[in-house]
Length: 274
Image (cartoon, rainbow, N blue to C red; front, side, top):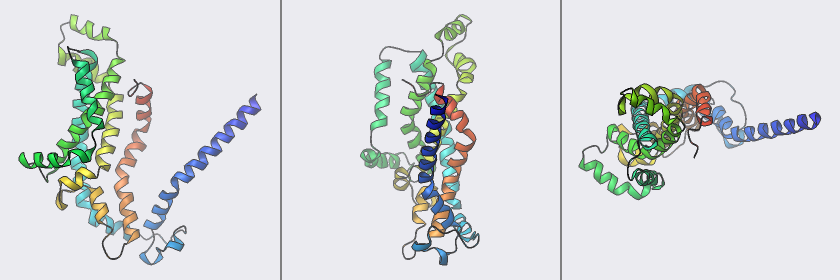
């Protein structure tokens, strides 16, 4: 039996290693291409390592993408923070302060997750123009916060459902009100929920393309739109393109590297169950 377990484990690790290598193939091609000079970038030499570490691609990409990189920071950070706070308050209400019709309202909010972006683009653009937020970063933040409310509400509602209601009843007896109970009991207990929702929202907002390309023009566009424009029209500088792609992916990669432990912990704690 122990021999079978070791063999089974070895096969599992071998398969996982094989799948991981297969998944990392595009990353390898991007990385080696980004460190090549333009003369070395050819289709028949795409698997070869660069003859030397050429950083000109990164310098060129950073020079062109720096303003849009800042736009993405100005967009993703406040959109993530506001989405987390609103989702937390909504989840708190739907989990512990139910009222008549709250279940129907909760289902209606969840329905927002299934509305395709493309179906609301025209009225959304007209609305943003009417409130003078079209082609602005705050306007893009508003759109992402509204579109993030269903998923953030769902995650926090399920997270708070696992907290004993007796805590809320005890706090009520002690004289605590709606915001007092949230501030002193639920908010401190929901740090793992905030990490899960924060990673989810930050990644979604950072990588989003459709709203960014339709609601903003060049100066306000985030990095994902600028990355697409980096390709040019006559000659594609693939080393610059690949370096730009890696720079654009770096913030979300760092978020997962430093917070993945808390992300898994939050998932295991039941943040998205039910």
